[in-house]
Length: 184
Image (cartoon, rainbow, N blue to C red; front, top):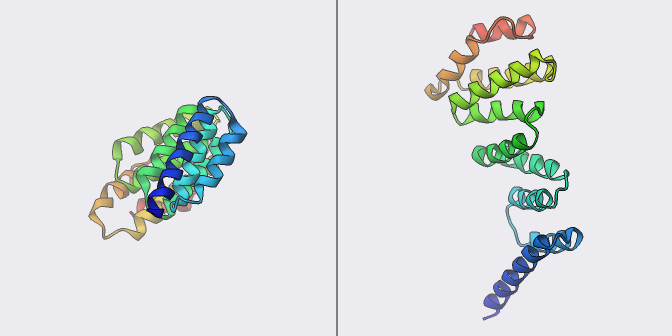
């Protein structure tokens, strides 16, 4: 009986939160959410929901909450959750270098070759327009090379090694990265 009462109170609190959000009462909604978030065992999910609330309230700090949630999802190898957040971030800011480069890495982790290539092509286009700098591309390629090298016996990642080895020589990468890619 006591458990049912606690569950009923939580349900009412979630409805109250939805009502506050619908009415645009940001501070009250966040206060109620902070209380409710203690009942959530998944910290990444709690950050995601807080980001959703902030996004609905047109508060740009939602981006930081989404990035924090995606970081935790990444640590837990919950790639699809991280991708969903980064794709939402990308729809809000299509030229955000850190988001686009993160998506390239996340897509590679789940072997989504087409999306990885599309995102890389977009990043390369933004590099040529000087929106993405050399360091961002170098960092992502380095992460992918390291991943490809550490999973060299994994046949699922054979496409990644092949894709990396075919990167155009025009990429702004130091010679040691291009050499590392060539030995893949």
